[in-house]
Image 1 (cartoon, rainbow, N blue to C red):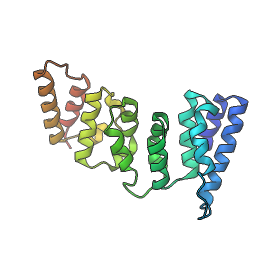
Image 2 (image 1 turned 45 degrees about the vertical axis):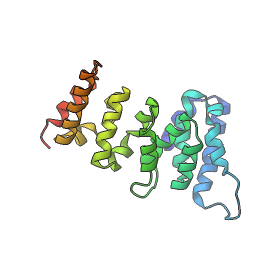
Image 3 (image 1 turned 60 degrees about the horizontal axis):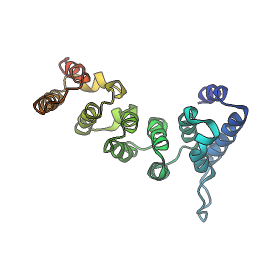
Image 4 (image 1 turned 135 degrees about the vertical axis):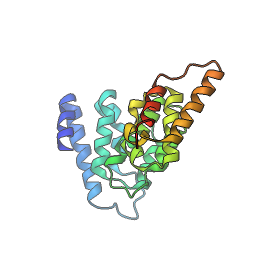
Amino acid sequence: MRREAAELRERLSAEGADWLDGALAEAARAAAGPAPAESRAVPGWELRFAAAGRACGTEAAESARVLLLCAARPGPAALARLYRHGTGEERRAVLRALPRLPLAPGEGLPLVEDALRTNDTRLVAAAVGPYAAAHLDDHAWRHAVLKCLFTRVPVRALARLPERARGDAELARMLRDFAAERSAAGRAVPADLDHVLALTAKDA
């Protein structure tokens, strides 16, 4: 994480770099111990999470937010709050940070599942990363593959695609059915479909 922070700092203005240092320090303090039980104020690092776009610029904001999450190590309730109230950019950062956070197995799945119900292609792409590959069950993962094909999200966004698709006869059936439905409706079949189908034909 230190290396990532250093690399990000080099992309920022002096003011942005100072902001990042302060934000990461505040997040680390939050991770070191819980806030007082009587406090209802929004933690300072969460306010910084929302302000990252203004402080770091649009291009660097997602990286800054992921680093903040890694430093703060929030639990599922805080993550859900950030995701629920966040912009699309903030939600993507939450999804991308999931595999790096100390969550119990599956605790981040509700956020992944919510993202996969949207038609926001950037959100879908963020949702099918390493966390989804590690925690979605076979049924949900197959539907995530179809979601990518349906929304034209490149299947390279699917983490561990060759591993999870290998020898999956049920996924192959679903892909063929999807292609047949598209063809019958006079719609183009996504080019990525043949690639995934070929992966399913490999020995498990």
